[in-house]
Length: 96
Image 1 (spheres, helix red, strand yellow):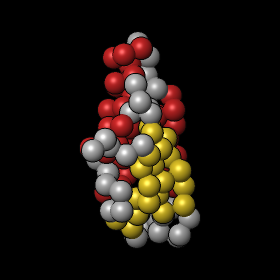
Image 2 (cartoon, rainbow, N blue to C red; image 1 turned 60 degrees about the vertical axis):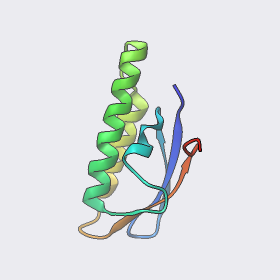
Image 3 (tube, one colour; image 1 turned 30 degrees about the vertical axis):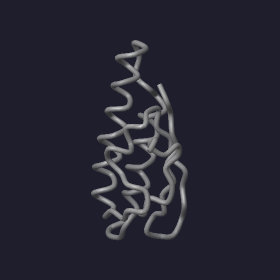
Image 4 (cartoon, rainbow, N blue to C red; image 1 turned 90 degrees about the vertical axis):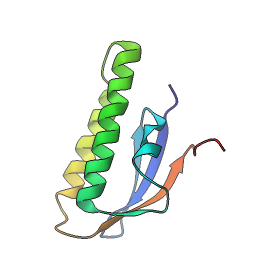
């Protein structure tokens, strides 16, 4: 199962590299796009939940890294009342 990283910029300007065990993030986020904090949490959480479910279906156990990444995103987002999250990079990209 291919894994990927996606880098985001939070409303305070901090940049964070995030992990997903699946390329499914491409179905929920777009490189260069900007989302409200709430929308980013909703989209990334749904994608990470699906990625963990895919690991469970393939290997028989949930992906603790996806679960941890979702927890970190939710915790960081809780520090912002408003603002946007920008998707800086998604690697690997989708094949052409």
